[in-house]
Length: 189
Image (cartoon, rainbow, N blue to C red; front, side, top):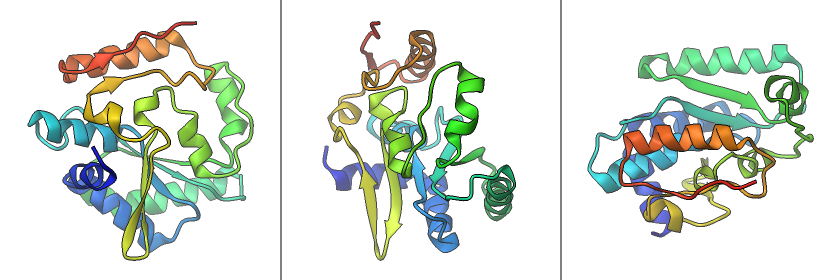
């Protein structure tokens, strides 16, 4: 699979397309639609399922040096108001402030990031390390490991990430139930 095929399948999901368009209109700094909603839309295209099958939420990352909760909350409210008509659960996070709350929530260290793609690099699964955003009249696609695992329906742990094997196994099991065609690579300590 090449970038353009990945992008075409991901954008067949109208929610993905609408979120990306709205991020472009809002001009949030370093804003990307990321992770499962992209990959799962591609899986759905490859397996002949409805474009939104199994998608729990749509994740948006942006990077703003204002790390106050008030600033992030204002962005969350604005984006939710603009996208409410989609009826989708949209999760928005300022990657500049993740290190402030992540250790308390997950019990794992999380060093400060310098850009949104750093957050993508830290995903639990390597196969969801994707981001898409508008770039002028085209799209930027962030795919540090390429497209082979997505095309081959492979779920793989992110070995570069200090992560919970239990969380990986739970996520992989949920996906395997929704997309039985997946091959899940076991996580090891």
